[in-house]
Image (cartoon, rainbow, N blue to C red):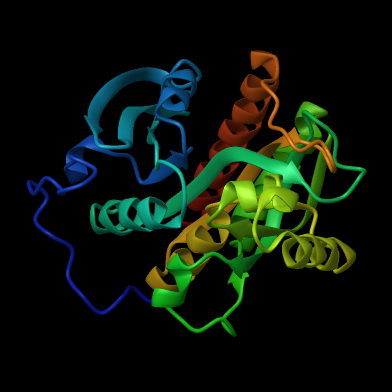
Length: 263
């Protein structure tokens, strides 16, 4: 994972301002959904999980996977809050972040309920620009990607691996023709689809850039809730979300075993 960043972690007892946590309260592995309600769903899939904090958009449950502490922390929507949460959690010792969110498809083969594993992300959001120039790629950690692929295959879950795209303004992508610059937006969406982008979300490129800069592992597993041309986000049966979360927890279990084997 490379050398540690050149600054010192805060004292263990220090409670971080935004996430409302101390190092004793959070696992080193974090499942990172946007929706605070989703952390409660994740908690039901962890061993002995308890709610630890609910500060702003950051709701935290901590439990265990194979006896190792693992937390579910919500990030809220978009890059700014995702980056703030990552920064504070990293300072508390978190070294692995796995986003478990939703996405809209940009390729016709990606259907409602399918899983998308991001290998990298196009940086059409603004938060990561404060870290490094656009030339710096937003790439998922290969260990996390590998663990996700293995877990999805074992679960028999229909999934796609590829480059996604992160945005700041959801509705400019969802309903481009209603925007003042609709023709340009429509042309841009078509261009990215022709380039091979398979889905859009709002956080992954920030996650990957912050992960690279801060030397922590970051990956993204997404549930498709919007097919090409639908123009609306669908509420899927909860079983689809539960299946995605089980795949994510399976991936975390694989990472834990791999990390323990290297010690």
